[in-house]
Image (tube, rainbow, N blue to C red; front, side, top):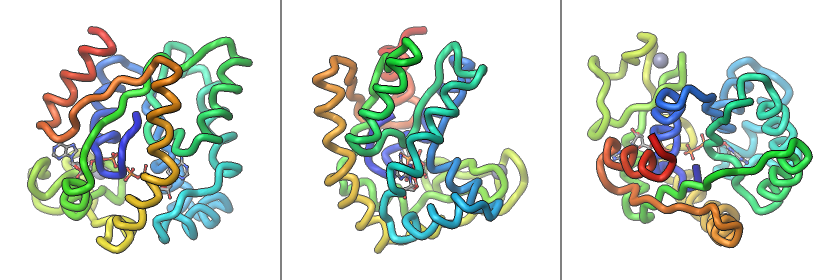
Amino acid sequence: MLGAPGAGKGTQAKMLAVKYSIPHISTGDIFRANIKNGTELGKKAKAFMDQGLLVPDELTCDLVVDRIAQEDCKNGYILDGFPRTIPQAEALDAALKIMGTAIDYAINVDVPDENIVNRMGGRRACVGCGATYHIVYNTPKTADICDACGEKLILRDDDQPETVQKRLTVYHDQTQPLIDYYEKAGVLRTVDGTVDMEDVFAAIVKILGE
Ligand code: ADP
Ligand code: ADP
Ligand code: ZN
C-alpha cells in the first residue's frame, strides 16, 4: 500500500487482510509495539517518529524481510507503510528475488494534501490494539473507547498538526518517488482515496480480484 500519511492505507490493509486471509504487515505498528514494550529498537525509532522523520532504512529493512520469510506469509501478505524510500524498495526487491517471489501490485491510495490534514487531525488510535477510528468518518460506538478491545483512543503524538506538515514534506521528498519506481516495474495501480472507505475498498478488490 502506497500513499501519503493518513491516505487510508492502514484502513484498507486491515480490510484486505481479512478478505484474503493474509497477514497485514505495518511497519508503523511494529515500531509502535516496540515503543510500547520499551525495546532498544523502539527507543531508536521513537526519536525519529516523534519528529515526523523516517526511521533509518538500516533499522527497517531487515525487520520486514524477516517478517515476510515467516510461514504465515507463504500465501501472500499486505505491506502497509513499507517501502517508504527507494533504498527500501530496492532492498525488498533484492530479498524477494532470493526468495523467488516478487511484489504483485503496488496500490497507490491517492489523496491530496488538503484532505490529509483533516484526516490526521481526526484520526484516533487505540492504545491497546492499534485500531484506528476517525471522529467524523469512522466513529467508535462509544466516544474515545475502542470497539474492538475497550481501551482508550488517543490522538497519536505524531498526528499533531506541526508533525503532520513535516511528515507530508518527508512523504513528497522520500516516498512519492516510489510511484514512478513501481510504475516502471509495471505493478502500480492507483485508486482514488478521497471517496468513502467502502468505495476505496471495492476499487482495490476490483484490481486484486475476488
Ligand atoms: P501513517 O499510517 O500515518 O502513514 P505509520 O504508522 O505508517 O504512519 O508510520 C508512523 C511513523 O513510523 C512514520 O512517520 C515513520 O517515522 C515510521 N515508519 C513507519 N514505516 C516506516 C518505514 N517503512 N521507513 C521508515 N520509517 C517508517
Ligand atoms: P494511513 O494508514 O494511510 O496513515 P489510516 O488508514 O490510518 O491512514 O487513515 C487515516 C484516518 O482517515 C483515519 O482516522 C481513518 O479512520 C480515516 N479514513 C481512512 N479512509 C478514509 C476514507 N476513505 N474517508 C474518510 N476517512 C478515512
Ligand atoms: Zn483497541
